[in-house]
Structure formats: C-alpha cells, structure tokens
Image (cartoon, rainbow over all chains, first blue to last red; front, side, top):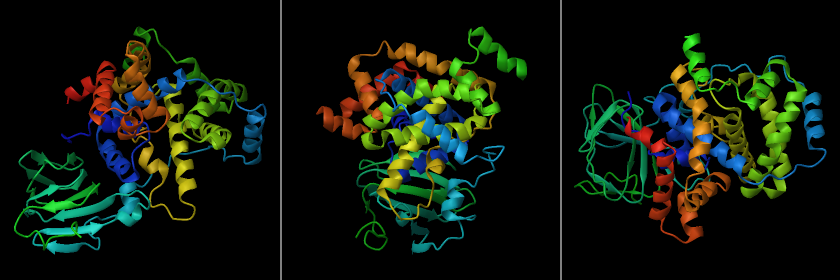
Length: 212
Length: 200
C-alpha cells in the first residue's frame, strides 16, 4: 500500500505530457500501483480535455477526412483492431525480469548503484538505480537540485518516515538524510537527478558516483 | 454490480455523453458516419492543440495520427470509464509526445515507448465508484473552471496547450515560480484535485 504520493503539480505536468521521460516513468510506475493517484490523473486529464475544448478551433483542410479514410481503407486493420494483449511493464522492458540481477556496481559497504542515464538519451537528467542491502545503511547526504525517487523493491526509512515499494519521494537541497533499508529484502530505488548528490558524511570522497 | 454501476449515473441525469455514444459505434461496428461526426467536432480542436504546441507545420499530420489512433483504439473505449473528450485528449497528448520524440531522435533506439510512459494503466479495472467519479469530473471541471480568475486559467492553458513546464510559464509571464505554483494550486483546489490529496 503506497503512502507517499506525487504532488498534484507533478501529476498535472504528467497529465499535460510535459515531464521528461525519466520523470514520466517514475509517475507511471507509481500510477500502476496506486488507484488513488490514477483517479487524480483522470480528473487532470478531464481538465486537459476541457481546456482543449475551450480554446479556439482551427478548420482542417477540406480533404483531411478523405485522406484519413483512404489511409484506413488502404491499410485495413485485423478484424479485431487491437486486442489489448497483456503488456510487459515498462520496468520489465527497461530492466528485464529481475532487477536484483543487474550489473550492479558495488560502491561502499551496503550501497550499489547502476547508472541507466543512457537509456534516456537527450533528457538532460541523470537516472540511477540504487540498491541498499537489507538492513544496510547509506551514508548521510544532501541533494543539489531535485531528486525524484520511486521505491521499486523493499523499503527504506529515514527521519521522514518509512518508504515502501512504489512510494514516491522528492528530495532537494534542504533534505539531508541517512536512509536505512528496512525489512528482509534489499531496497532498490529508481532516482532521477537534476543535479549531483552531495555527500555530507565521512566517506564523501569514496562513495561518489554522483560527484565528479 | 451492474445496478450499482448504472444507477448513480442515472441519478446524475447522465447517461453516455453524445460523443461517447458515437465513439462506441465506431468501436463496435466501424461506423463511418459516427466517425465523421467525431472528426468534425474534435479535429479542429486537435489542430489548434498542435499549433499551440508549436507543431504548426505538422498540425494536419497530428490530426491524422490522432484519428488513426482513435479508429484503432475505439474498441477499447468504455463510456463508463472516461468521457469521450477526455479519452481523445489523452490520445492527442500521446500522439503529440510521440511526434516530438520522433522528430528529435531520428535513429536512436528508444528504450521505452511513448505509451509505456504516458498511457494510464488500469484500463481494465472495474470500479463503479471510480467510473462515476470519472463521469462526473468533466462536467464538474467545466463548471468550476468558469469561476476561476483569468490569471489561473492562463497558467493552466499554457501548461496544457503549450506543453510549458511551470518554470517556463514563470519565465514567460515574468513572475516567480512560486506564484505560478500557487496559482495552479488554487485552481486545482477549486477543481477538487487537491481536496483528493487530503483524503489520503
């Protein structure tokens, strides 16, 4: 049961289709598991429809509909146009069946990371998977810019509370935290970073996938 | 469940919206007259949507892509789950995103498809409460929107019609980001989106 949701402003940007792809992915993964936020996005989509209806209209060309019909006639669809086949989740498409079994790079002690920025070319944001072994602790750090995180597996806790699978967290400059993986599973998160992390603890220079 | 499903809608004096009924005809029997009526109504909206999104030279093309998608997906449309205009808006948005992605990235293989990121999951759920909520929300939004101050509507229009982020809207209107966000929050509050936040 997710407890930590994206805020309305982010959902609005999602509904309007204005987020970068990594951010949209975080929201989409949360929506997959959260009926409450799906319902909020439904409302926001209706807002989009109402906005579209209340804007000016521009006539289409006279032949537009004929063109459309000839396209439809020349490429007839199968009798049942789209059977909604069970789809792979976007996460599966991106990372395969087992997120535990990835080329994780052990950083320090309990933390492993995997940079998947290259899967989102041209988005200008760092996209990183982080794994904290069950019971493990990450060093204290703050964030430069904004870090949007969704928990993909397990749970972690910090001074703000416990974040379970599919919970959504946004951290920025003011948030210094020292997450601990709780429960019996390794905690895996997906984070979108608008700017690098800043470590505040003793191991600042060692654990530094984010400081270059 | 069927009665539960239908009665509240009736109590609201609301059955299928006319566009929803047409969309279902297209889905069930590839009804071309219904499809044409939908085209007449929505194509000019979508063309303006394309132009305001900076796709003026591809506006006709976007209209075509959206309507091809409507034709193909109409069998999935369920009036109990979304008003036709909301359903069509999401298709227009997805096609707009898809067109921009293709224009920006000629050859690079995309790890995830547009629909993976933007299509709302849970299309198969069958929750009467949710259905009712979906049906009511568009009418409610139209009513509340008419009461919003112009400055709030302007911001929302830029977000939805010009795919501008809150930051870009702030830059363009030359007002602080915080002001944009508070206008949006006030508006969403009126539209009851924020109220739903508090029910968590």
